[in-house]
Amino acid sequence: MRRIKPLRTEQYIEEERERMTEAAREARRQYKREWNRKNKDKVRESQRRYWEKRAAAAAQDQTDNTQEDNTSP
Picture 1 (cartoon, rainbow, N blue to C red):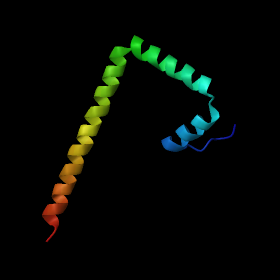
Picture 2: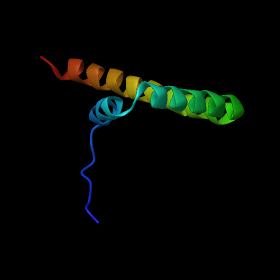
Picture 3: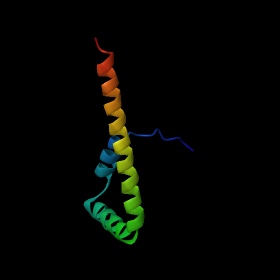
């Protein structure tokens, strides 16, 4: 079996967008809307984890910037 080189997310999305027909995209959207409606707790938990990571990254960036400012003459 041939090993597929992993693509960056943006590249994958763009290539997939080119391959899919509008009907296929709409079917995917419909499935995702239904899944989200049926799994509200999973969606909520996923969003919570996402924003916790974003907040932690922002706090880390702010700490890094503060440390850089303190070390400059």
